[in-house]
Length: 230
Image (cartoon, rainbow, N blue to C red):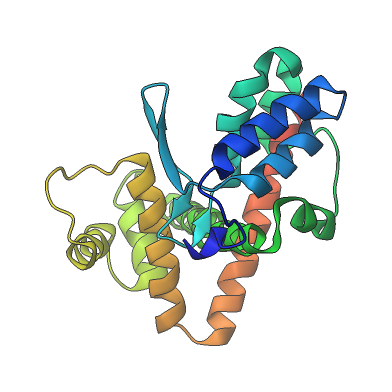
């Protein structure tokens, strides 16, 4: 896959795990060892402990925290549980790194794919949630019930189509059939599809404005979560 093009051998996964275990055992900080192990990792998806992991969404967007969850499971006995929880659930690493340091640690290709995930999945989800809150406030201001079609109205504001209409287009384009419900991986893929759909159909100023709104929502939401971290 393009996002993992820096690797040249099929044994990258085992190399990553072996490096991680050896580095932690020799005294390297687990977070720094983890990032280097991610650099070595090769597979875009795998089955592990009766669970399917998809690390690369739509072949372009790298869910690095999902891979971090998978890899830290290999060394749980050597990691303070609070630090692991803070990283995986609150995106709060035990060591603060600059963007350049993080990029160097996981590799340029994975970093580009991580940015795709940040803007194409996480930011798109935040845009929907932020717009839904705006719709809710508008409805409450005129005495309408909170659950009265607010999600479809939010989708219509952003994409000019309802969620069900967009899901139909997404499923048709991807050739997905069967259950009406989406798995977590399919939901991430849908969000990434929505991001591309919106960017293709909006002018640059609207895209920039929506991106700022989404990132601000993400920052506020993350800040509120971190208030509860011990």
